[in-house]
Image (cartoon, rainbow, N blue to C red; front, side):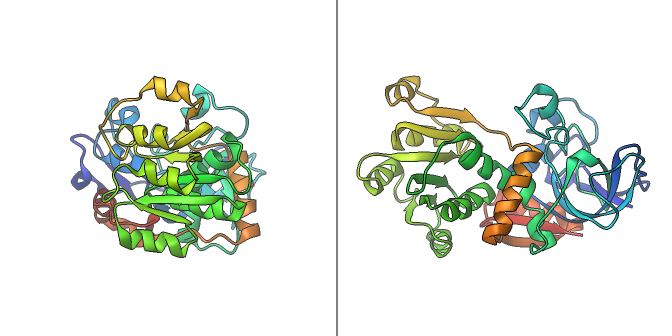
Length: 338
């Protein structure tokens, strides 16, 4: 088989396609022929040597956590799935249910466990899940990280009701899934972007309020205006230090900010006084469990939610796909096709 590999000195240009032995499933494992893989911002950090959990230890990494494939063989003791089942890989291979623990969070694909960027891969039967039949392989590949992150933020951690206002930063994978889930749940949505073209696409998906943060850098005022001065009930915070101050100004008293990403890079630090004064909740969020994933898939099937796949590359052109992500060219998800 062939696989993608990256090692020091790191960098997108160092990602290579290599020949590797075909794997064999052991006890409790399944052999999956991959059909599609989707990209996350974490993958870009990892390939560039900026993801401390991976690059700091050196060695070779097979990247990508999110994939769709078909089971070709099973090892002894496998009962959850069978040969011929189409499955998604799960971001955390050992987090089946319950609260996160260090052990569960230490089972992420890409690192420390070799990822889905290979033609054939073995996974624990606990680390894959069957998926809705109506979705394409490319759409399934978008679910394990971005979709589940948005799902957990909106429905597992926050306590929202129909009619509540949620703010979704940017138009990447997590935020677009957040928009789709929020509309299905009856929430009012505010979405931000630096591109009027992307905002128009978000409007077509049902966004209620659009804010161009390039022309309106103080976008918290727009959120306040849209909520008649009350503020947002929930904010999907993907920018990190570059956007957190605006989120703190935009959140209502007692509101919930889900801290998901750091794509905006450096900026002002957190001002605890603002968080205290409005009794808001700021919670870090790292994907979710298999139990959450399967609940999400039931909702996706019920509401016929179609993930937004914006760009598709052959898997052997992963360098070009990562460059597109680095350039912020996408709306929704970028996918590699096997």
